[in-house]
Amino acid sequence: MAADDGKKKISESTIQRLSLYYRVLSILEKENIKTISSKELAKHEKLTPAQVRKDLSFFGSFGTRGLGYPVTELKNRIATILGLDREWKVAMVGVGNIGSALVGYKEFQRHGFSINMIFDNDQRKIGSNHKGILVSDIANLKEGLRENNIDIVIIAVPATVAQYIVDDIVEAGVSGILNFAPINLKVPENVILRNENMSMELEHISFSLVNRESITATKE
Amino acid sequence: MAADDGKKKISESTIQRLSLYYRVLSILEKENIKTISSKELAKHEKLTPAQVRKDLSFFGSFGTRGLGYPVTELKNRIATILGLDREWKVAMVGVGNIGSALVGYKEFQRHGFSINMIFDNDQRKIGSNHKGILVSDIANLKEGLRENNIDIVIIAVPATVAQYIVDDIVEAGVSGILNFAPINLKVPENVILRNENMSMELEHISFSLVNRESITATKE
Image (cartoon, rainbow over all chains, first blue to last red; front, top):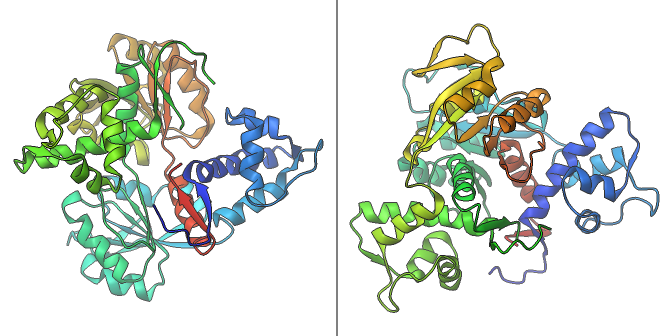
């Protein structure tokens, strides 16, 4: 429903597939494999070769017909497209169960997402050191995000307070938010908000188990 | 690419929207609101009323033209469709950082997903009590899952061992798996496997931030 603003349009599932290609190519590179065909790349992800070629052609021309794609070059190109060729400054808000686990989640660091600020409202946690990072008072959220030029904030707070916190984050000028609170948050159009709801993935499974005899889930 | 097996087909995004409708309806019910129009329901999720009506009509007829949907009835109906009207027996494999946080994740319990077995390979954890649940030896995974009639297994183990563990889970007859290991796993067609890759959500954000001037992500 966005106005036609002259921007190219890409589907969310294409972006997700780029992340998957990136992972496969990283493994192939480590195995010292130099080239890969769209057919092989498709097989890894249970896609069609045409889908792979279409996804990649969106970003210009890659590879040589008959020779396949050069692994390292394609991997690096996708890294640039996904913004993985730089370091992102990430802040975590809320270090309860989930937030605390995410601070130690090595996959984030590995892909250039470096959590270097933590905020919480628990007086017992504020001022303490959490996996090497000082826990700041959430009362100083706005100033802290601004002063440290934070690019992306991850929220793992109770649903009841999430919107207030998001409002502060937006006011601080941060335009990327990953939300783990089980609630729909409102942000201005220029802010990128993604929701991670792990319970919904389980519901997808229970739906499929309950309806397996009568309904098939399809990608589109 | 599945053969035409006479099953109805539903898109994955419709299933996800059912989960969202369910959440909104649960809140409305608590607020003692009796009916809601497709227009209002759409507004909550930034969808069109036509989309909401289409999603719901897939499962038969709901509501009365002009009067809207009865909140409680629709909520209960969606709960049945999603399999949320029963208790699912869930086992967690791997209680490191992420697995441990998931065991304490209240949203799972709230939606009928009850984690009542834990497996790990760490001798220091085996036999101990983890948030009220005994940690079993992963060597006994297959027997344990079978004997306890586990419906769904959540995997939060290193990528290098995930496929071996999944093979055991499948052999034990479990047909719902939620995978947090950052790797593509192979399962037979009758097994429902969902992947949760939190790093990929961050990559979606970094992609959007890097390309915000030139590319817009769309749902389809």
